[in-house]
Length: 140
Ligand SMILES: Nc1nc2c([nH]c(=O)n2[C@@H]2O[C@H](COP(=O)(O)OP(=O)(O)OP(=O)(O)O)[C@@H](O)[C@H]2O)c(=O)[nH]1
Ligand SMILES: [Mg+2]
Picture 1 (cartoon, rainbow, N blue to C red):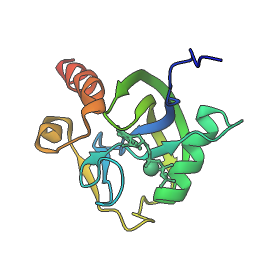
Picture 2: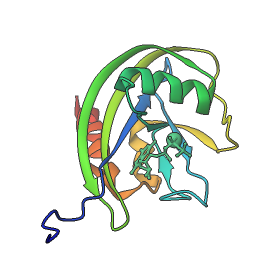
Picture 3: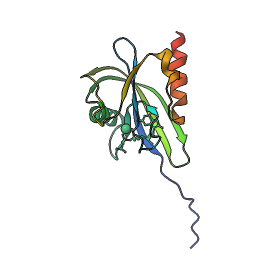
Picture 4: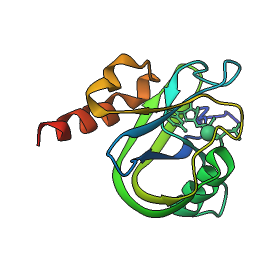
């Protein structure tokens, strides 16, 4: 029988957090060199596992990567991006309260960055709509 079903790589579902300090700075983490989009700065987070809710994934990733517990998270935006080697669906939340002091638990460098300095950091291409959103809201 002819195979008429096109090859489809499933879209990777990712939960990511724009984490705010009480002073309003945003936490960035640098992706390890050997990982997808390595060396670029990201909003902490990771893959949603099968059967897991996005918020549960977000909380788990922030605990694993930064050692913090998210207390308040609001949906910010959802976006899709097709890299040559993978397609992602990013579910982005604003985290405005958390418990603990963020640390690079996986050895990743961290930076607290004010919105006016976000442009100085190199991000994966998928992140452009997130940056547009954050920079737009800087106008208010
Ligand atoms: N966390 C995060 N991932 C992003 C961002 N932008 C972006 O394109 N991604 C992509 O989304 C995917 C997230 O994967 P990840 O490497 O964080 O996943 P993970 O924490 O579960 O890591 P693991 O696979 O080593 O367990 C990667 O392909 C990554 O390149 C971002 O701002 N934050
Ligand atoms: Mg991750």
